[in-house]
Length: 351
Image (cartoon, rainbow, N blue to C red; front, top):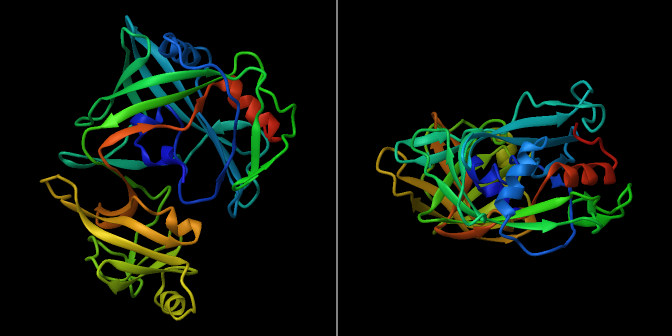
């Protein structure tokens, strides 16, 4: 599972907007020089020179869709900037047709998710103030939402010119690019290393997930007790409680009473997960979440380790916990590199 999808929008301003709960495929690859002292300046220049994309994702779901988030930075002072994310979708077709051709336009339903701060859940913003540190390798990012902490990240730049693009058209399977397969001049990628001093929690909204139900299909208003069967229509899966925090994970068609009963009556679950009641350290209402601490079974299930369930706005949603520690993201790419990826995979370049 791509670790980038577990971070809030403050971290993902550096990488890409999240697309979770569906099959994600895209492009990457290439190798080049190590990070230099001008990494932050180059990163800023890419933002100011037509927008920094970070990454794009192509969902092979009921309706195929290609999306990309364009980030821009405007100077507000010496080494100080305001960063803003615009969500884009490649679509000219009506609902029900493949959204992978035509022209790029504004995404009318971008991903929404929420960060846990001292006062509870707050929607992660699309804007932030940014300061380039004096060493040229670090950015300090402060989100435009009251109570959100600043994030300090080190940046490593890699030049990709004339290196190979690895295109993927199915999950985990590399195939030859439609285009030349080489990055053009000016292609760069960036990786970001930052630390959380305490566990960080995010929940997804209804553009990514769906409210969780109890074992009879009724939408839950509060977090289910540990060792209680529930159903998540996002995947969709029934989590059948077996005791001591252990749950069988059953695939289901939906989270209605009949579908839940039929799923549990099946022969073999997709796997098992162990959940625990996880203290958040928040004393103002969101004191605990359910946290998946281990898992066995198919990849879709084992990839749930680190996932959480939390209560927000009289419903229960899934999200992620990032424990305190240091993280390095997957690469984010400038627009030149992203357009090479898009064209190499037979899609349309961003304007």
